[in-house]
Amino acid sequence: MAKMKFENLFPTIIGVSEYNDHSKQESKVVNHLKKISKSVKSSGDNWLSKNTYNTINSYNILNDDVLKPINEFVFNSVNDYVNKLEVSYENRNYDVICFNGWFNIYNKGNYQEYHNHTDHTISAIYFLKSDEEKNARVWFESPIPDRVNELRSNTNRDLQHRVYYKAKPGTLLVFDSSQRHSVEQEQIGNRISLAYNFNIELK
Image 1 (cartoon, rainbow, N blue to C red):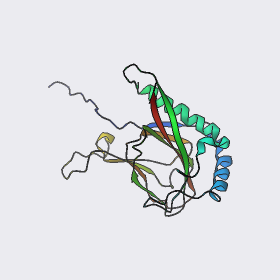
Image 2 (tube, rainbow, N blue to C red):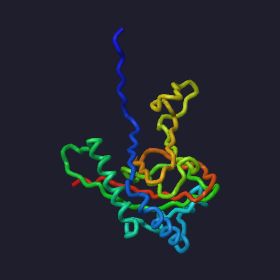
Image 3 (cartoon, one colour):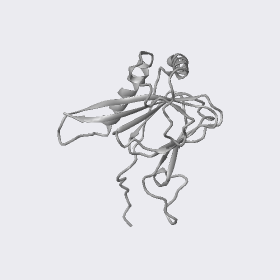
Image 4 (cartoon, rainbow, N blue to C red):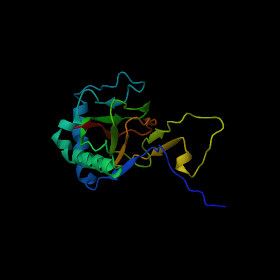
């Protein structure tokens, strides 16, 4: 019998990067963001998870000089993601533009329901303050609906309907903005993440 080969069509591609200088930045940035959170109102009133603090419409971290080193790491990683995917638009030049950035603070009991960012092209999550083994994980959900009689596997991630990533400090996740994702309920608190949206602008 001929050997079968597999072709992964329409895959969900998650880029994972580690920031080597995270330990040099964490304490300063965490204290800075906690100070901001005392004076800037959370903008999560329209979420089911409205108790989770976020600044998506109230404070743009792209304009914050304290976050400049981390932001630059994120921008470089997103460009690397695009380049390695060999993104192209019929030989037209394009720019990868960061549209906005915000931060999230998860206290005990906080969570983020499944959602996506379909107004944008690429999204990213950076784990700033967290305990890899204890803090809430990020889950990604397959765009294929659940079926009663579907292929399943405990070992092959290609067949898993939901996959999680632990909140390891200094780790960045980059993904297609249409990809549904969530944050499970936080059990201990003191978890802080940064989030970004990027667009492709054709020239």
